[in-house]
Amino acid sequence: MRDTLVLNASFEPLSTVTLNRAVVLVLQDKAVVEKSHPGLRMRAAAVDLPVPMVIRLSRYVRVPFRRQAPWSRRGVLVRDQHRCAYCGKRATTVDHVVPRSRGGADSWLNTVASCAEDNHRKADRTPEKAGMPLLFQPFVPTPADAMLLSLRGAEWDALPDWLAEAAA
Image 1: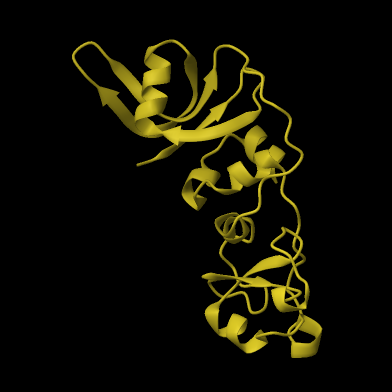
Image 2: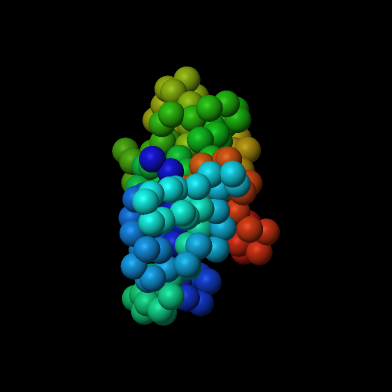
């Protein structure tokens, strides 16, 4: 299933939905297609619709303010684009910069994506003690950034320039 980005009426990212849900929102006139997949269309007896990649709600939806995205292992992998913070290879695990046994928490600033080999090699040590400097520093993504980063690479390239720049 393709993920479709949903924008509020004010063009701020809200969430991603399945293709089916996006089509239903458009057909019910609750949303309009802002960007579609080039060359793809959905056809039925009385419907001819471009396959939506980005939709915008017709009415503004008030969303409670969230200062930061909730921490999750999947979120850390997505934030770091599945790249190991120690060697740059494909990451499959999450490593604690300050190990949990030494008081490290499950937080955005204390966790990085890591390949299994480097995670095992670092073990129960800090990066300095293990002689494994970080290639990049962990950061706390905003909720909108976390959601936009979750879009796959091909979909990211196809986003409108103004939206991709806002997320970068």
